[in-house]
Image (cartoon, rainbow, N blue to C red; front, side, top):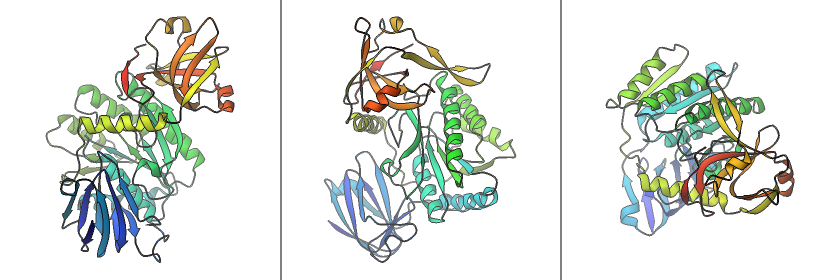
Length: 409
C-alpha cells in the first residue's frame, strides 16, 4: 500500500505495521527520517528509512515535507489513519523550547535533570520527543526509565539508564549503561523507597562516567491515584532532586494537585503543567501492557540456558529499606529457609562481591546435598566465577516469560 502525505499531515500507524519512506522527509517522535540520500546521515537525520511498529503500539509519522510512504499491515482500515495536523501538541513544543533554555543556563554547573510525571497518558512518548529534539540541538544526555512494569530498555522488574547516542523510537535504540534489579513490576510497600534510591544511584553513577552530559531525562510510572502513590512520588522527587518537572495535569486527580503544590513550594525546581490533552495519544489497556511486558521478558530470556553454580561462599539476599539511615540495605536469607518456600522460577539478580549486578536469571532449584543451585541465565563462564550473591525478587516466571506467581519473603 502506497500513501502520499501532504506537508503538515500525520499518518497515525498502529502495529504490527512496517513502513518505508520512499520520498520526502518525516518526523517520528522528533526523529527525522529522509528518503533523500543527500540528507541521510546529517545531524539529526536517520540513515534508516524503515520503521517497524510492534503490536500494542502506535507511531505518529509527521510529514515535514510532501512525502510518499509504503505501508505493510494486516488491517489497514484499523491500523492506519491520516490527520491534517501534527499529533505533537504545541504545549510539548513550547516545553521543549523552555527545556533547551534551561539546559543552556545550567550547562556549566551540572546536567539538567528533567522528570516527567503523571498517569499513563504519554509520558514515554514525551520523553522520546524531548530526547530526539535535544539530540538534534547537539546536546548530550541520558535517559533513565524507572517504570518497573513497562521497562523500555531491559527486562521489567529492573530500572536502567542509557546514553542517548542516536535518535530513539523504541528500546532497541538504547543500550543500558547501568541497570538495577528491583525484582517486582510494581513499587509496593518499601519498594517505592528502594526504587527512588536506586534511581538516584544510577543517575549519580551515569554522570560520573559521562561528564559531558547536558541533561538527564527521567521517566516514571503512573502510580499516583492513592495516598501511597503520593508518598512515593514526593519521596522520589526529594531523593532524585530534578531541576525541572513536567506534569500531565488532570483537574480530576486530587493527588496530582497535592504533588504540584509541593513542587511549586520549591523555588529551585521548574514546574511545567501539560493541561492540553493529546487527542491522538494511544492509551494501552491492561491487555496491551501485559502483552508488552510478557514480550519483553520473553525476548530477554530467549538466550538463557540452564547453569549450575556451586553454593560455596554464595549468599542469598533481599533488598530492604532502612528508614532510620534512609538507604537500601541487604538482608541475608538463610538458604535452608529459602528452600522451604515456593522459590522455583523466581526472578533473581546475580551480583558480584560489591553487590553490582552481573546478569538476571531464574532460580530453578537448590540442592543442599550436592551443594549447588541451578539457574536459567546467560552468564558467561567468567561471569559465573564472579557471582558472590543472589538477590531474590518476588516475581515468578516460566522460561518463556509468562507470569507464574509470587514469592513473598
